[in-house]
Figure 1 (cartoon, one colour):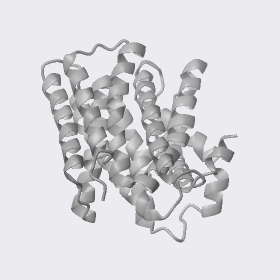
Figure 2 (cartoon, rainbow, N blue to C red; figure 1 turned 180 degrees about the horizontal axis):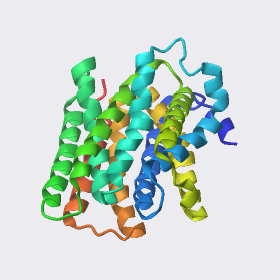
Figure 3 (cartoon, one colour; figure 1 turned 60 degrees about the horizontal axis):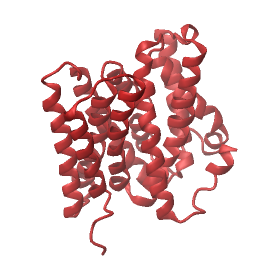
Length: 302
């Protein structure tokens, strides 16, 4: 069962577990970008998807958040707020709204490319992190990839202003979560549980205020979202990313998120029939190369 395997955190080599968690995260996030983009062609709105994304893990992880409480005594409330906003309800509403109007390829590049950059900048500005030359070169490559995308998008209508405004904001929110979780002292499972239950409660309030369209969606569409949003993204990816943060560090774990654009670009073309050209391919490859450097794998050993 999933709960059994998830509860085994810490029994494997920490470094291996960290890299495995990072790889699992980006694989799932690529499907999340595609699944969220797909909902633009369904009756489902962002509130509906949010109910699914956080309701499923909130239910499955109920034993965890019932044990820790909604506000664990050992964790400052401000960290919980930043975590829930950065990886929960606010992050989801911002990014889902952007992806509803943005093709998967450029959307994935801008979001995935901005995440490690925002995480590194916050780490340097607020926590005194000092990346070495290899990591700085990787961040520069990520910026170059995003610039290529920006230049290309100005010449065609694929990328929207909504995407340009909201996706970097989503990246900043995620960076805040990355640093807050690392300093919370929570396990990956506890962090995933708290984010899920608080975000589900927030989406219940949003549904009460603005309504829901869940009843209008087809069973195949609902099944796709339950699988991709609830089980994969909401539960497994959140736990996997928390494991990566715990073992690799915040900035190194976040660097892996920039692999998402490469997968989202290919997936958008294969599964959604979205066109992409040399600029999108180049941007994805440059960003992907930046990840290899930003993770510190090629950095000199100290």
